[in-house]
Image (cartoon, rainbow over all chains, first blue to last red; front, top):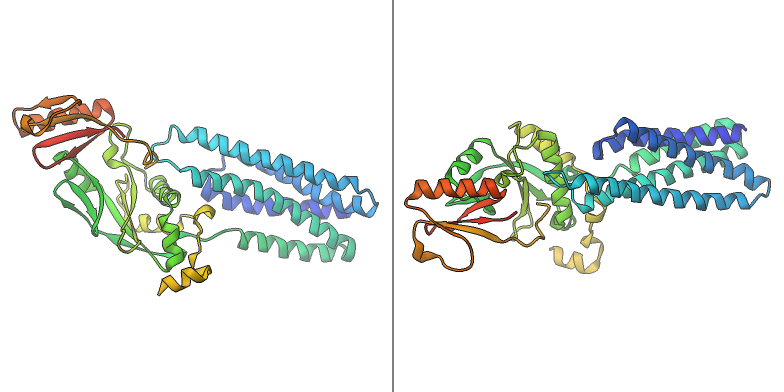
Length: 292
Length: 64
């Protein structure tokens, strides 16, 4: 009984700590919290029970883990569907890549909870409760640090930029953002808009910024944090991230409710690098040759 | 940005110089710059669309 308890507690603890990180990516509404915590608890329980079952040579118990895996895949689908449905009424889209990333994370975190519980149970069998506590602490630490992922601030330099007009074209440091026909809108953009340049630190970062999904995620995060003046009938205020084809750097254009550059810089820096956008050309020989 | 991949279409053209534009889009001819701007603005708000300037006397409205 101690073994199961130790494993379950470790797994649940891992899930609870990871939910705090979830919050940044996806609003954890009270009901969302409950469903994810319950599933985390079930995952932990299954992981913990598997060890005593194996000791009793009850190998069929192990197949239950496969059943759990199936359930977790459903979570991914449910999360994806929910977010996709919400997306339709959003003015600043999260984008498919971001949604896929969130859904995948939710699935993976249940596996993490299950693995933590399983390993802790093994430790409890082999070394008693003290060993289980040490292993659990190490595993939880690892899940929290390793699974957090990088942010834009880690791979890019984010600096304030100036918005200029070339005729009707809105420009940020030479990058054409959009054409704004109405003079009255141009005046408003001059008053309210903010811009930052996102400069990749290396070729890997440049490839990440090339990803349209990643750029949508940046625009979305900035719009959520600072608020956006955009409405359905004011497409001029759509936050945009456009790339400079010469250098690979990107410019973010936004018309925020709060015109605060410091806050914008931080919002952009804290945007998670999407798993699907984490491209590493420098890992290949061809990429390294091209990089100099 | 979400609809970047979608095809954009020209919904209308507003111009002060009717010789500049022809074709199968609604063309609104304005007497002066002020009228052109006002018409463009009204149309854009009604259509939830964006006004672009060709800088040759023509505004055109593009669906988002």
